Length: 360
Image (tube, rainbow, N blue to C red; front, side, top):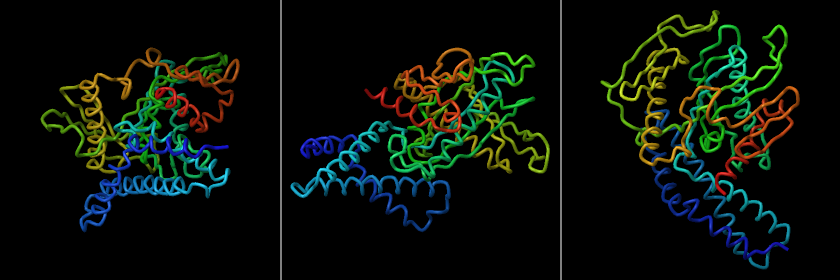
């Protein structure tokens, strides 16, 4: 028999963790801002505001619904109580994503490490894996959600791509837009290792390849580090490509170098130099804000992912295709033999295991 008093205790314990009272105040402010006549003067800011409004509104509606049910003593069946237990469990999972930036969009960078063309092909496989993870969120059922997060409105955009000469990619930058994108994808930051029979080796020898995944939160303009133009070197160049109608033949690609920190950001995805510069500036601000927070807090475990040589350092997961089939996360020991499913985007269980483990 499910104990309703225990459910109430668990429910009320979430009030402060989920900042329910603060979110009620925030909802009022967001609703007011959403009716401003100049809302769409800044389209990007408007989309961000409305996304946040939907997120806060959905949480508070669920909270009020649960609060109402839990006050109905004597009127709830055992099946009702079990359903409430499941809903509270989902809220407890969301409470694990209460970090300062967890609700933000994510900027995900994939670097090919050591291993030549095999490593570049591996980096492209990871790029596909993350794109598929975003796409699968649009159709998944409620009981299939990673950490109970609704990803049906997530979007992914390719911001920058450097292709390999023979196959694969040397680097890709993805922006994942949606509620809790950073909160979930921060679990992917680190070195990913692949072991397989090389399709690029005439002798089909077993090859080990590495790729580094870097994940940082996109920071709202008002909270981002302000950048002085005199600290920047701005270079424009022609966007790369393999030929064909889609190749941009103008010098629209932009590279920003932040001289004091040495951080370099390049973007060549958009058609116009202005758009590429704006996107590059957004990424640079996110990197500098992250860097400043690390220095102030001295807690790099929260927002880590500095570039390292791919075969060294923070190796988080191995994907073995030969001589056996296994994907294993070295931080949590979670593993599965369904390698192809994982490469097709089924990384939710790994993310859940990681987030549950770090919040113990």
